[in-house]
Image 1 (cartoon, rainbow, N blue to C red):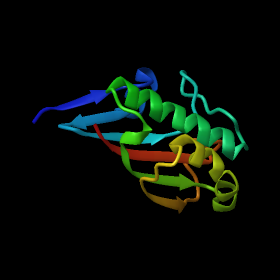
Image 2: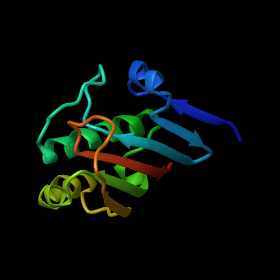
Image 3: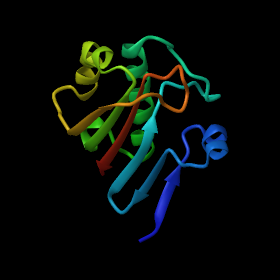
Image 4: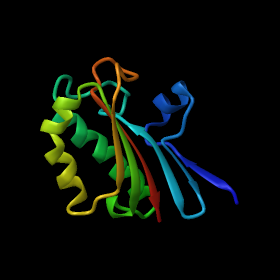
Length: 127
């Protein structure tokens, strides 16, 4: 079975050496999504809620490229630099899924690829 890759922000992804998503069969593996603009510059420094929203926007755009939605997500891993701030802003995540709850793990880490980023969300979807 051939793998199909997808680049949401081709310039930055190629510079860092990864694809935003890889599809194998009906399974779509989406790399960690951050709050970044099209030029790979961090957005919403210091605002966990807006960063969560921007990460889910990137995930939605990636899923849409394969005909999917957040309802196709079956697993997510959320990396955060401040668990308390994440818990306080979790309503943004809950609104994104609108009642659907994939298997989820949230982990606090010391830092992410960009120091301004507070959250990175990685998902697996079945299309």
